[in-house]
Image (cartoon, rainbow, N blue to C red):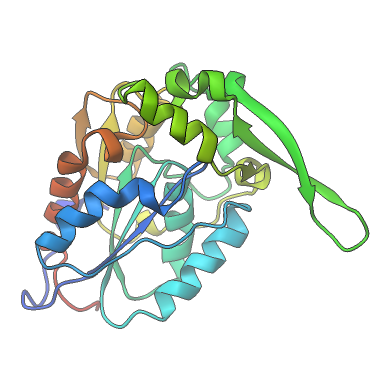
Length: 253
């Protein structure tokens, strides 16, 4: 649904802005954006995304959304885009979506299949595999992290070396289910969407992010930068999020 087709409602009510981080990261990746949104008077929540798979993480996020009073503008970075696409489908108080260097999968798609089609992404070659406990009887499941030696190139090439070294040390692995879980009916089919495409995105892949944002009918801006554009250029991301928040201001229908 095109953002321009969605009328604003009740201009005196500001939505709560919920920011969902992506794989290999935590909620602090939004810090530069959060401060700027708070300065404009918005309530912001940046929850910890469990990173255990699209189904589990979407259910977790939907539970949070159900406990927020009033309208919500829901934003996702990277893998977080898949989470918000699914979570908002069952959250009637979400009034808009913002995709920041993010996936916007359609019904029946997996992120693994989507990534295989990217010519811009180098992420698969940078991943290392680990096992984690997945049951009471010694069962294990697979999760992935980024090889620290390759993190800057694949994930955050526009940040200083000392910053990416810290990111490599503190990264949070993501379960393989994030790439294999089948996405459900996406909320972007019924909600207005906005998107930030980082033209130097080698993780999700600028080509994939762009094509999925176009398919969603999003209001798109393209910015020169890496996959972690909300860290390297927080003002740009905050400004586009504010544009979205002002467009959807008001109570949900």
